[in-house]
Length: 249
Ligand code: NDP
Image (cartoon, rainbow, N blue to C red; front, side):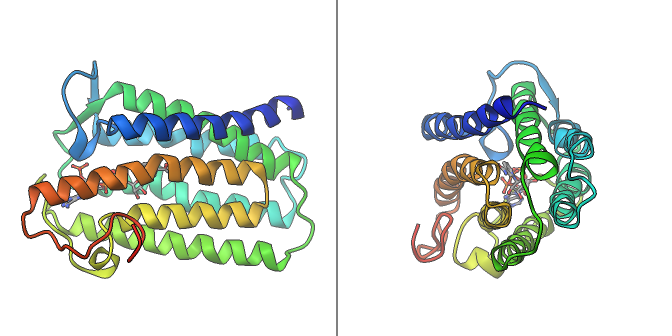
């Protein structure tokens, strides 16, 4: 692995975050409730999720275990928490999603997400397994890990609440009213953002920071689109509910 290539990749991910945020101001990524025709060939949703997220498990593991620090305890902790999130996201989450049996998504989404995940796996696994140095668990490291798990809990619980809104084969939408849905339209995205904020703190690196910024760039505009969509679809949608950040936005 070349450190020059890796450094460029970290900066490129930041640049990609800016491009993504700008693009998503003009167009909602066409999957789920914002899916529309006209995006080319289509692909089954569940398989699409598994394929597009697979680099975060397979490639991440291959890169991590080819790194010089692979057997050190703190990189191992970071590797493990990444896997806790991404084994769920890649295999468990898509298998448990409801109302997706017949659904498809544009292949373009699968391709773009897969490509981003290749880059992100290289950036983050390369950092924690090879270029970063983690010799003792600083308070910052521990705090970052705690924040990560707080976000993981919020994300997991919020996704579960959405799942429970549907019976096994229904694909209808309704208004969630429990947990952080009382305050925001997309607490699953809020949880995801908190997780990668924790990751950025724990890794104390440009690698972690660029992934955190990318996640905000990707999910904040989508949370705004979801909020608008809820308000248009449900006339009695709660007024006080915000998009993503309780009481603020
Ligand atoms: P959504 O909130 O749009 O949808 C999640 C699931 O719940 C989908 O199966 C959706 O069905 C269903 N759903 C959503 N709202 C309702 C409702 N009101 N009533 C009934 N069912 C509903 O999330 P995403 O699909 O965008 O993302 C899924 C997960 O992946 C999230 O945890 C997110 O944080 C994460 N993610 C992370 C990204 C990152 O950059 N790190 C990028 C994208 C996602 P349907 O698909 O039919 O709309």
